[in-house]
Structure formats: structure tokens, C-alpha cells
Image 1 (cartoon, rainbow over the protein chains, first blue to last red):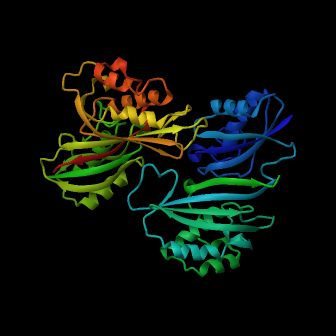
Image 2 (tube, rainbow over the protein chains, first blue to last red):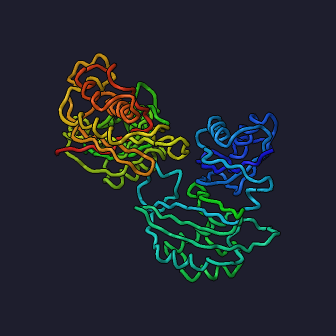
Image 3 (tube, each protein chain N blue to C red):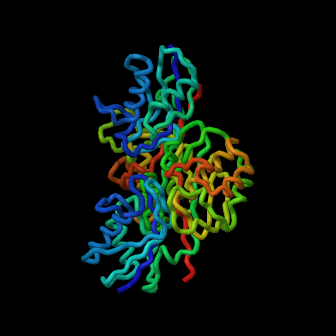
Length: 247
Length: 247
């Protein structure tokens, strides 16, 4: 039995997210398990580092799968890419110790959110950005974002009402860049709550348009109440960019 | 009656090209005529500068339409973008003299072709590039391309066998750039024959992989025979980038 770590990129547009749900095959995990199960000759379980939502994309999702079939890393990558649909790709394969678990061992994740600032729609960006017609004040967004960097209880930025585990997470950095008419927000942290990145982005957009003040971000964090934060930014602008491990 | 010039961007993936064919609605022209016909209250004709093939995209297609309905440029743009599908967008509207004809008055067109050079498929580039797994020799491609710049009979680069009109065209420039792992070929000329850009690119790719020598490009041009040139590069890498007028 060999444990394979795979780095994946996918266009999440037509999928119902990462996680398999019952018998539905329209998930990334479902597609991968279908292809790898055929190779192995029996059902396999593919574990993903991040359970991306419906419509969310990945540039560097990490997954692992334990296989008995004898196959090299290169052969596995070629086999899987040959049978996967074109909107999912394995970009690297590596043999890892059997104890490696892509979700439980992840120590850092980076998400990218792309906002397109324009009154004119762009047919090539529509599935990969949120379009905002108003002008955003990036300096204010940066200032508001700085309140979120550090170890905090991010309960205000979580969509699950009854969450029994800790809602404390550490955000290492939030970088906001402007590239042509696109605003790219990169958020790096030790882990993220359900919808956390999208609620942070939704709140930052409200700061950028002037709907909320810079200082309100601090108050939202302190309130530990989802109602205090802004709306959840749409799924199609979000990319799971990178997952890091310390093993 | 006012003649409106519109600049359009579209993702051609799910369309059967620009030109309306009988009753089929799955063309860019068909979509535009549907939306504008509703506004005008009767059938209208939208004339496009370039008749892009199925799967070909546009960053700056130009079209014109004559309307009797009273509407400003801004209102027309907003109306059309509201009712067009998300993969087609009007990016500018301008009132022009009634004699303006987007196809007949075009004096220069620029096409862009994107090649992705990688052994690993990229889910985000698949619909907008041709993926080549071999390494391409760009310097050789540039040298071969230089034989095509000027006024020549491009019969070898035309898919239509029985073409009664002149096959002489002028190419003003062919620029080949490498951006990360993408090779971008921009071809600017006074007009292009059926499949001409895609056959030029297909032949340049064969020079890049070593399948044809640099000097063969000159011989192919001289032969005036489609059989001499390389294969037709696939539609999804091609973009109509810009159309220019002298009025």
C-alpha cells in the first residue's frame, strides 16, 4: 500500500464542490474516486485538504489516496489526467508516508479572491471573478484587513450557526493587490471556518465601497456574531491557491 | 435611422461561430439580432467585421446595426448587455455615419493565437489555448514567420478550395511573444482568408517542433497549394483582437 499526495487544479464552475454527497458524481472528490477506483479495481477514498464549495476553484488543492496497485508517480499522474474531465487536472504526484493525511496535517492554506472592478462585463472573467461596478477604495480595504491578521475568534465570519468546535483561527497575512482592473485578495492562515474567506471578502468589499467604515471591522470581529459582518462574496471568485505541510 | 458601431468581446466556446445559419440561434450574430430585434420591435441585421468560426473568441470584434428606436449609446450598451448571455459583452457603442459598414470598411485586423506549452493540462486555459506538450523553438518560429510579412498570394494558407476572388493579402506584422509558459502569436493584416490565421499558426507550430524547416515556409508560400502548409490549428486558441477603420 502506497500513499500518494496529489496537487490538483480545477475549474469548479460545473461542480457541486469538493465533497462527495451520497451518490452524486458531480463533485471533484467523486470524479477522482471514480477514476482512481477503476485503476485500483475497488472503491478508494480520496481525502482533500480543503472542502471547497460549489463553484469554488483550485490552483493548488492537495489530496491523498492510498493504493495497492503498483504504479509510479509519473504513470499515476498521466493515467488520472487521461481519464479526468478537462476541468480537473493533477499537476503533481508524490509518494508520502502512510500516516500523511492531506486535511489533518495541513498547517497553512492560502486562498485567492478575484474581484473585477468594471461597469462593462468581461466574458472571460465572469466565471473567475466577482464583478463590482462601484469603485473600491483599496487603501481602506487594506486598513480594515489589518485588523484581521493574528489569532482571533472568527465567529462573526462563519456561516455555520451551531459550530461546536473552536472558532479561533490565525490569519498570517492578507495581501490586496490591484492588477489592471482586478483586485486580488490573498488570505493566508492556519485554517478557515465555513465561508470564512468569502465573508471576509464580502465585508472588505463593503468597506471598499464606503458601506462600512475601516474601524467597523474591529467591532465586527469583537461581536462574534455573523449578523455583524457583510454578505458572503460569491463562490466563483474564490480559488484555493496553496496548502502547506510540515512533514 | 441611426447606425451604431459596437465593439464586442465573446467567449466563443459554446457558439457555432459568428454567422447566423438559417434558423439556428446558437451564433453570436443570432444572439445579437435576437436582443436588438426585440428592442427595435422588428427584425434587424447585425453586420460583423470578422466571421469568426465555431469556438473562436473575440476581444474586439466590431459590428454595426441600423436602428430606428431612439436610444443613446450608453442606454443601448446597457440594454444589450442586460439581455445578452454572459459569454457575450458589448464593450463600447458609438454612433457612426449611415454609410459605415463594419466588414467592408475594415482596413486592418489583428488576431491573437495562444499556445500553452506544457505536459500538464491547465483547467483554466483549456478553452482559450492549444496545448502543445513538445518544446517549441520560438526563434525558428519568428524566422519562419518573417517570410509571411508583406503582400503575397496566401493561397497555401486558405481552406476553401474553390475561391474565385483574389487570395492576395498583406500581413503587416507577426509578433511572437513568450509569457510564462504561453506562446502568443499576434498577426496583423489588411484581411484574412478562410482559416488563414489557423493554418499559419499550425505551420509555425510544425517549424517550432522541428517538423518543418524555417526555409520551408518560403517554399510553402510559393507553392500556392494548401497541401504544402501545416495543419489547421484548433479554433479555441484563436481570438479576434482588434479591427481598425479609416473613417
